[in-house]
Image (cartoon, rainbow, N blue to C red; front, side, top):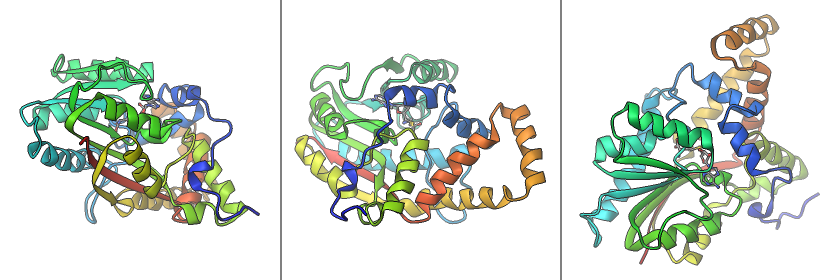
Length: 314
Ligand SMILES: C[S@@+](CC[C@H](N)C(=O)[O-])C[C@H]1O[C@@H](n2cnc3c(N)ncnc32)[C@H](O)[C@@H]1O
């Protein structure tokens, strides 16, 4: 039995490597099959976040990704408007994925964006998307690591990172890097998965469920709501606002997982759908099943939260 004092952020995925992250986002490990599956409803070649929906809003659609991005952007630009760099329209997108958020920032908010991502497939795909959407070169993408951003000190007035830090092996180091590249008075927002400490550490069984969640998502460890705020202060940044929005995204994901698992109990349906899915998207339904099960077991216990944060560099 584990001591309940074991801090959730100290609970690490022992097998994680950055190669797993590349695998998930380059369609070369089994966890990528979830994105193939989801591509039937949403634009997974542009957006790789869980989105945000209020009751009555349809979730499995690109519009849910855009709602999350707008929520972060509105809070960020509000801070920016009150700061010393309001005329500076350049945004840094840390771990920009396939570029959907950066492109949206340009089209809706008129921002120029530099995106950085560690996965070559994503950086390439993001650049292709920017060209197709005719926002290149206002929106550009580079290969790079959030732990050592290939950017000069104090070079951006605006920065964000959307649901990517979960994959970073050292989140305090990432926050310090953001603090380094932000101008004094610059604004920053990020969204991320959070471990709910008392639930993760409540029992050995919960720890196992949590380990499996980290494994299926190729995540090294998660911060908690509190540990993130401490790390932010340690990075010299000042928290302005934070929100837990689990009910608007992870709870919806969990409901969809429960429906999937219920339908999977009908063997004939599972076999038929497995063949259809393979033909339609190339995904292996058994891989999707494993991902959904590993997610649902953790989410239904309330083990994972989803946080939004807005901060300033003083
Ligand atoms: C869940 S996706 C989110 C992408 C994008 N922000 C979005 O909302 O669509 C996570 C992204 O983080 C990137 N990533 C993971 N570890 C990274 C690191 N150390 N440095 C830079 N990017 C990283 C992955 O390649 C992937 O594109």
